[in-house]
Length: 143
Image 1 (cartoon, rainbow, N blue to C red):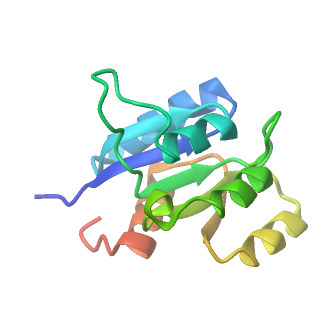
Image 2: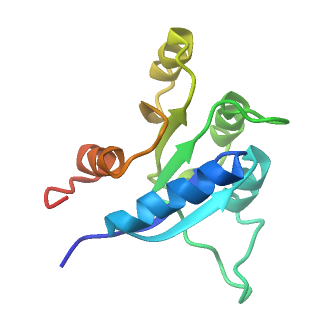
Image 3: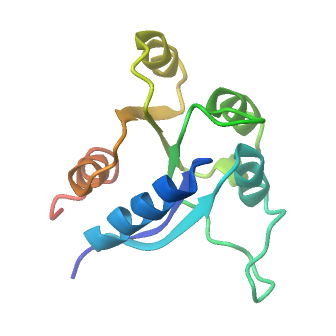
């Protein structure tokens, strides 16, 4: 039986990108649930427990966050500044991967200096990239 992550959180302001990325992640068969937020602020609310499930219960803590850099209102860098201030329980052992269209070498360099960014990947997301992330950060040997 395949090991599966409980939850992945996508943070990207582009609805079509989120739709495709969610589908790609689900098609790997290695993730039980994919949550999507179209703003960094909504993602922080999700992580801090300000949002609840439709049944009124706690939402699952993501094991993996795929974070876009370029978003309106609050970009990925601002999200990371506020994410850093969350309690250890709210951050849990979440792996944060920057997933971006930016080819600016300064963005990648900046990301490498932030300790809780585990990886920096360029879009588009593919099943192969998802599986690489799972192997690298979650010891998915069977992936």
